[in-house]
Length: 87
Image (cartoon, rainbow, N blue to C red):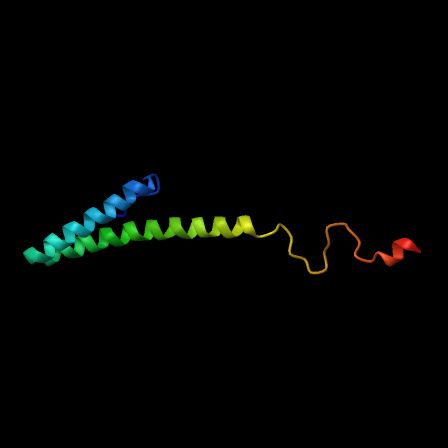
């Protein structure tokens, strides 16, 4: 059963990841391998959501820096050939 963490704020997502990691440490100390497997699955879900958010943020940053048009030879309407204007 997959949980939907998309509406969870970033701060709460970080807290959930830390909480699951603490529970895994406790389960490991107690030798609860079945519990560890379940917690690993939950941790993978949380990390996947975090990874998707970070990827989206990186894409948005790159997209903001990329010009709208990347056509080679395109200019901004200004002529570089100033000699033709003086003739």
